[in-house]
Length: 172
Image 1: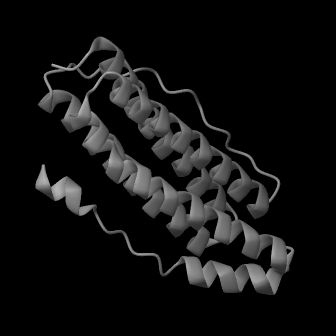
Image 2: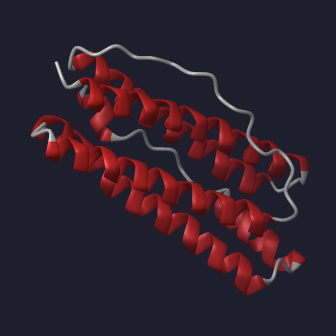
Image 3: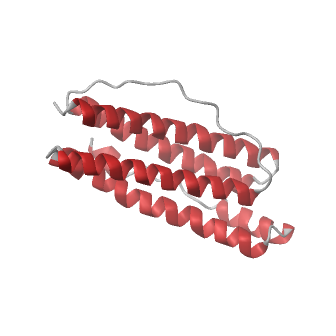
């Protein structure tokens, strides 16, 4: 059994991951309404990844003898001014999630909970990839200045994203 502080932080993170899935589903819906199916596909895959992250934390809380506590999710933003705004928000959100995971990792070290600290290392590495992905797409959007032909080219590129469940999920 982990400390209540660590369990509370893990439950908060679980709910943040669930909100992330909701947040990205709203972005998927926005792009689908704009007939940018590649962008919509990108966020559909992102939603699946966030649900995987939530499942990993859900399973870990149960594994260590804690109790999962689900909270109400707030409604995400559903209207955006541009694809650039969407990716600015996505990058900001990923940075928030990274910071949150780092806080749990720091607390785990302070509490000498090396098992949880070790568990979180996968998330720390994953977040570096998440931020890099959002940042690269945002920089492409700024480069093309949302020129319609550039948007269509990027839309086609994003349609090739493949969902791959994390191998850690299959280990649990």
